[in-house]
Amino acid sequence: MYCIYEKKPVNNKSVSFKFQKTRCFFGYKSGIVPELLRGVLAANRHAGLLPTNQNEPVKWHLDFSKELGKKQDQAFVINLKPNNAKANLSLYEVADVWGYSSSGWTPAMLRLKALFVDADPSKINDKDFVIPHRCIQDPILSLIYFSGAIKNGDLTGKWTAPRSSPTNSVLLWPATMAFFMGIAQSLGVNSIPFQMKTLTSP
Image (cartoon, rainbow, N blue to C red; front, side):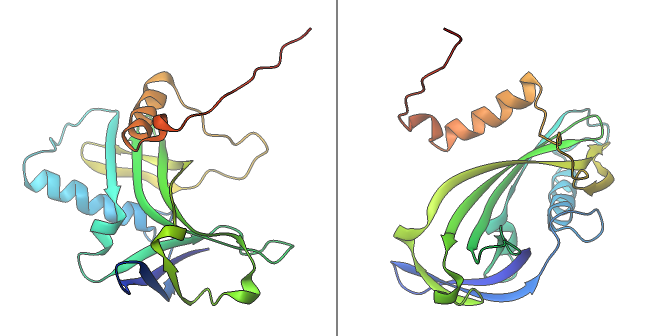
């Protein structure tokens, strides 16, 4: 479930979220990503920064906090598990979306801020709550696909999500992977220490 919330600072330590309405994420006509992206493309075209014969691939970025905050204080929030068999509240704010549009498809990387992760919904009013900044986990990265791209400075295709499939993973060619890895590193992901052990055949 995708929703628009009113987001306002309570003090220097907390922020409030109040539900306003549901909103589509995917879809050329009704999706928030295509809508915001059309605005960014138009602004760049008007400024002379986007030639009409723009070749693929087209790399783009949407700062959701900036774009949604132009008219009023809003946040785009995903309820990740609305129909979970076991009661579960997992709310994530979308902070940024980066896309790599080419050949009719757009792999995209989302930067999410975790507001609640596998929380008990009976203890939280998910329509109106206050959360301390220290409890928000950031960044969390997620990869998705749009069935659509950008050609000659305009959106093409339906910009819907691919159909559900057991093999419906995000396929990343080296250039696309390098693009997303560069963004992840700029967010400080490469500074997180970890150890990985690889199992091989004895």
